[in-house]
Each structure stands twice: as C-alpha cells, then as structure tokens.
Length: 509
Ligand code: FAD
Ligand code: SIN
Image (tube, rainbow, N blue to C red; front, side):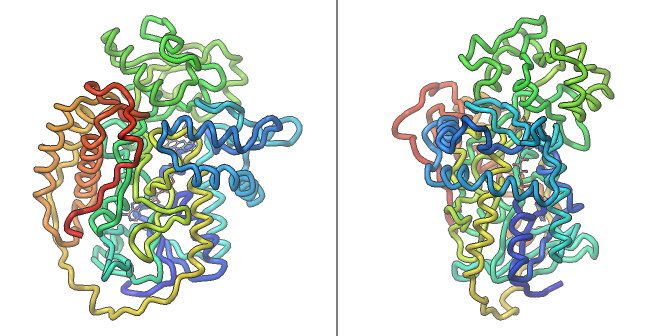
C-alpha cells in the first residue's frame, strides 16, 4: 500500500468506528482491521451501555458509582466528561438506527447491573454490541470511510517523538508494508487472549498496547484485569468463553454453590449485584471451598416468557448446549473479560507520543480506576472517541521522507502463547500471591527474550501476548496492596501509598 492518509485508524470496534465516522466528515480516514470488519469485542457486548436517562438518576449518581467502583484511582475529570456526554451520544446511536429496547412509553428500557445505584443500562435485548457494531458499520459506509480487512498492524513508526504511521502485514497479499498518516489512532481493543479462559474473541491479543509500549508510550494500570464472574463453564465458541450477562443478575439471577446454596449475601451487602471484583473473588472462594470447578447461576424462578424475550441469545445458546435457563441453573466460572489499563491518554485521547491517539479498551483514560463498572466501557469508547475526532481537527500535515520508513526488516518469532496463557491463568488470575507473580515474571521474561527486534510478520500476536503478559505481571508486582481487581494474598488491604496509577514506559525509549 505504502501510502499516506490524514487519519489512520487501527480497529473497527465501537472506538475506531466512532472516531472514523465523525472524522470522515472533515478528513480522509482509513481503517485497518485484522480480520473481518465486525470481528471485535464490541460485537459480543451483551448487557448494554450505561447512561443517565431515568428521572430519578443524575450525573452525580453515575459519577459517584463509577468512582466508587474505581477504588480511589478513577480520574474524576474524565469520569465527569464521560457521564455528561453519555445521553447525547447514546441517543445519537439510536437516531442512527440502533434498535435499543424501548419500554411501553417508548423510552429506553433501562437495565440494572452491579454497582449501579439506578437503572441506567440502555440495551438491545442481550445483543447490544452486535446492534451498535451493525449501525456504526453502516454509518461508516454512508460516510465513505475506507475499511481494509485482513490487515494486521505490527509496529508504529516513531521518529523524534512523533508517530508518523505504522508497519502492517497485508494478509491478502502476504506482504509487509507501511502507511504514513498525520495522526495514527489505535483502537485495537482488549487483551483477554493473554489468558486461557476469556470472554474475548481471538482478535483480543493486546496489539495496540504492545505496539505503543514498544514505541515508548506510557502504559498505565495493567494489573487491573477484570474477570467477569459468569462465563459458561467448560464451553468455548470460536476461541472465547460464552458470557452470561450481568443483566441476568440484574433481573434476579442468583449465584449458588454446586449444591444449590446461595452465597453472595455473605460477601457484600449488595449481594448478587456487588461490583464484579467482589463477585468474581466470591465465586473462586466458593469453588475452592466446595472443591468444584464451577458455581451455578440460577434465573429459573423468573417468568419463562419474559426470560426468552429479554435474553434471547443467552436462552438459545444455553439451550443448544442442553441447559434450559428457564428450568435449571447455568454452570459458570469467572473469565478474563476487560482490561482497565492501557495506553495512557489525556481527556482528548492523546497518548504520550505526538500524533498518536488511543481509544476504547486499549486506552487508559483513568475512568475505570481499579475496577470498571458494568456497561461503562462502551460508553467510555463512545465519548472519548468522539472527543478525539474533535481534537484531531487541529492536527497539521506531517513532513516526512518516505525513505525513513522501510528500514526495518521483517522477521519471524516463536509462538509461546499457550505456555503464557497457562502461566497467566495459574499465577496472575483473580487471586494472586507474590511468589506466583515472581515465578510468572521469570518465565514470561524468558519468553520475551526469544523475539528479535525487527518487525515480526509471523507470530506477531504471540509477541504481543508476551509483552502484555509481562506488563500485567510487572504492574502487579509493583502494587503490593489489594485494590479493586488486583488482589494479592500477602497484602489484602488497600494502602494509602498506592493510591496512584501504575505507569510503565519502556526503558530503551
Ligand atoms: P474492539 O471492539 O475489541 O475492537 C478492536 C478492533 O481492533 C477489532 O476490529 C480488531 O480486529 C482490531 N484489531 C486488533 N488488533 C489489530 C491489529 N494488530 N491490526 C488491525 N486491527 C486490529 N462493555 C460494556 O460497556 N457493556 C457490555 O454489555 C459489554 N459486554 C461485553 C461482553 C463481552 C462478551 C465482551 C468480550 C466485552 C463486553 N464489554 C461490554 C466490553 C466492551 O465490549 C469492549 O470493551 C468494547 O467493545 C471495546 O471496544 P473497542 O472498539 O475498544 O475494541
Ligand atoms: C455483561 O453483559 O455482563 C457485560 C457488561 C460489561 O462488561 O460491561
């Protein structure tokens, strides 16, 4: 391709598409995406998008709930921006054709999820992400955004502190190439595939975070990996664990041990709707105590017709596997779900490298702090991607000699991803301990040394997984306390000295 564009976006989930559809109104935008354009975490989002619509709700309530879940690390300015911009942007999605579920009055039907003091989850039954992805892809087509599929971004081109574009592997032509851009926008999503058991699809290998880290960007709060308490036990579809939405607990679902005893009231006054970190740890504790490989999620006491209408995907999918959720409980386990940390950005989504933006799950705006409140992720992506599209108007033309760019050599590397996933599951999961973290650090560092410094065209994802794993482990070792999603057995309390972000930047840069 070897071309130059105004804005080069990597990723076609909610973040990349939101930026692209807005920026395309005043500039030329190219999206590279590594598989099919709808292949993203966004496409699988179930519960919904949190925003203030209920009469009794307010921005203060939503902001307070978000900050409370964040356990002292949420950036309050970013939180405020997110909650205040939410309703307008959610309504815009609806006006663009998103078929959000409406109540009898024609208003958004608002769901409930853990940690939210009010009903505020706008949803399209239990397939909200699919609906958002569908509408944004249509919008991108309408606005002539060019989307190039099967293009794998590999490494950023950074010269004198400025990002000039990136190298990518064109899987259609099987060739290494580069693109220059006035601004490069990483919207590559999460890192769930660093773990064996994850709700994230195979694209979620943390490529954007790994690329930005290798290029010298600041990366923050990687220890805060969110484990969703309820993914279906022992069944995978296309490389991901199937999620049972938190909205199921919002509508009355109860967590029980294998022998049918409900347990969440023991752990938190909010019971089954406690924040996710608490629920995930409770599930693991109960599984250990009862020597069981799963716990049960029971919603069978709720009206069957209502369940089929409210959760059609969950109902149909479980039924295919022989579980009728209207009659029996679902065996569930926690699974790696969401990356609260990422490429550190300001409230305009600008990273610490000039001309490099980061959006959505690969970024760290600071909104989520030490734990993300359910359904705040789609909202964060929507709000800060919109702001980035406004900020990007100020970007000036780059001046660059193309000869600077093809100096890198293509190389291949080993594939240790299975070994790394096993280590991460064993030592860097819901509950951690110092010895385990150190062991993980040693083994994964060892794998990292096996990769050359060139642009990898084979096993690029494996190197990204190794880089992300080491970032998570290092950040976890740096935080000798327990806070939000990071629980370390020897240091079970929160400590004042650690009430700050964990920021890592590659030494060589
Ligand atoms: P994604 O949607 O993951 O998009 C990333 C894009 O980048 C993809 O197109 C991918 O192919 C591309 N990409 C990655 N690497 C490269 C590369 N090297 N080169 C080229 N392209 C690349 N959040 C909520 O708020 N509410 C919910 O109800 C909810 N439910 C969820 C349910 C599930 C099962 C999962 C997995 C997540 C859920 N989340 C939910 C989280 C939320 O869906 C994600 O955080 C959000 O969709 C991330 O959007 P994104 O645009 O940042 O990334
Ligand atoms: C869910 O539906 O439980 C997922 C919601 C989220 O991750 O925010």
